[in-house]
Image 1 (cartoon, rainbow, N blue to C red):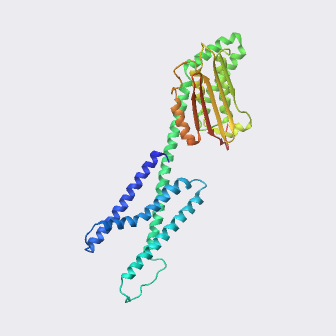
Image 2: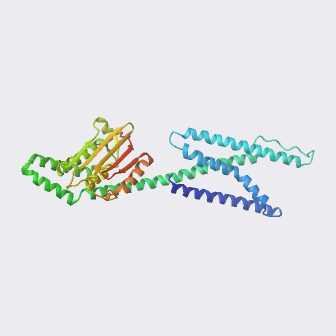
Image 3: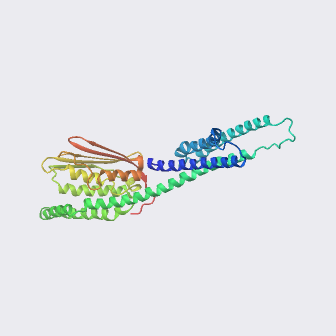
Length: 364
């Protein structure tokens, strides 16, 4: 759980233990009043409460902070149960020794010989109650932790759905705008008489680009081959938009059948590519954008570097911004996604590494 979640559940546990201690204290006070024992409350009573509840509290700490965070995970259930059994064994042994010690003290205080011999029980009632309390402490701890985990997992899923919807809308706002397509249409208009075939191909590329952004990207996940095709189409349009003698656009993208079996969120790299062209291209001096996407073992490695023709840095959050993309990565991958941003006076580099998710049955 995240830090904020941990603070909430720790506060609940603190309240529960305070309530338990107060109820136990009230029960002792009631018994002492009924038995006309004075004083009703003193340091001995408080010490007795502390010594009685301390073993159960230590068992709670052992389960909640040592076992649950590390072992109550998929594939670790057996180790968790072994840890719980070991904790219960230690606790029961301690409680048995403590009970035997108290019984020996009581026996020494009784008259000798006794008028009757008390029955010997293998598992006396106080020890049985202690064992029940041990199980209740662990069971209650597990129930509360799982309830909180399920609640916050649901919140995270809702946040992810909301973030994906906002990201898709922001992508559309950032890319499907009249200025962008006006430039494209002007370029096509100028190419019709000079290069009719190139103009026709540019219209086809634009239609593919719009179709992917409007329809395919509405799914929760897509396959890497479609994302690579989208990047290639986007770069193809940009190469026609900018003069080659001034703007160098290069890309190293993966190929092969394996791309169809890797899933990832749609348009995950678009914010970096869009920012590279938006802030890294200059009509007054030579500029460049270089993209690299590769499969490295069980991770997907993406990097993009572009020139910085202007100062101060222009890669502060704009459009969906880096803040939203970091939030999206955190919701989807957590700490498994690594994003590194490097700035120099001449260039700007974004390097992203995410784990590979294999697609089981992805429909085209």
